[in-house]
Amino acid sequence: MATGLQTAGLAAMATEMATQVTHIGYMIAAGTEPVGNGYARTVVTWNAAVAGLITNNGDLDSAVASGAWGVLTLWGGFDALAAGNEIIRGDLTNALTVNANGFVHVADTLLTIQAA
Image 1: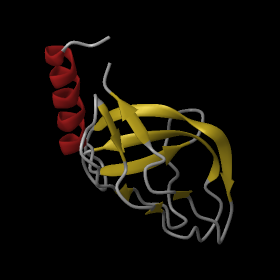
Image 2: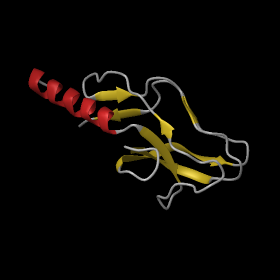
Image 3: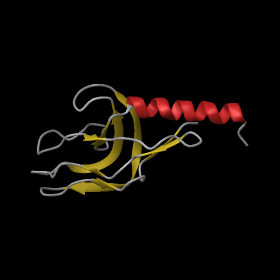
């Protein structure tokens, strides 16, 4: 069981992560983001940290693909819409194939980052 200081520390770490990660991107297995075909990172805002856990505040919907983006297997948290720094990376629960007219939808609070 976490002490009060440990809980406060985890909350501070999660809050700092939320201030740095402003955009969510998706990547293929090689760790690269799709190029072209309407791909762009999605702006993300976060709910307040609870016990070192943050979740997305509101649905995250990507742009609609104008062509194939490939099989997406990873997500990344970035500090900019383009270029910038990748702050965190994780596996998608299920790989997602995005073809023309497809898009990525992440429901409110489904994306979770846990400070540990």
